[in-house]
Length: 42
Image (tube, rainbow, N blue to C red; front, side):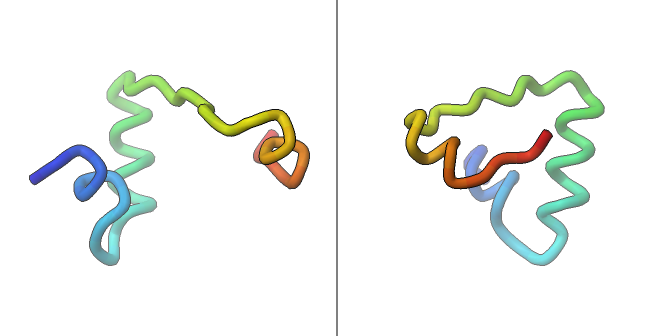
């Protein structure tokens, strides 16, 4: 299973993402400034 499939595939992606973050996975925002300005989480 690839990393993107693990994080974003299937029906329980939010749980998998939260688990990965809780386990120390870093979040890296690679959007352009324009994309970020369109909306982002706090």
